[in-house]
Length: 79
Image (tube, rainbow, N blue to C red; front, top):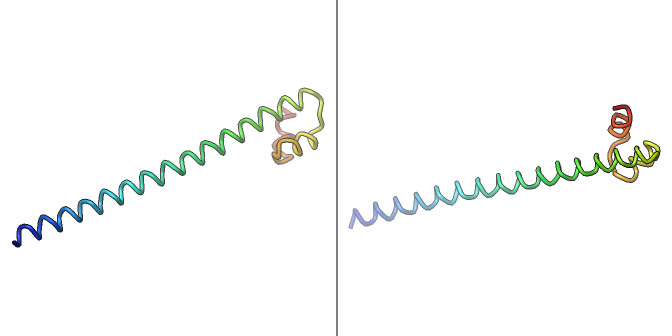
């Protein structure tokens, strides 16, 4: 009977370790997706800002339209 209990405890410990690892991986995956989306949105807004500047809009108008900080827009217009 002692062997059965030891095997059961070992199994439960292994199962808990697996769940911990799986939760860590799932959390890292979600965080990575969120970061990727934020970077993609920023990149798209930057590209839109460059097009709007090329069309002759002011830096202030572009900042308002893209919701990017005015400083970033000014840096884009200087490059």
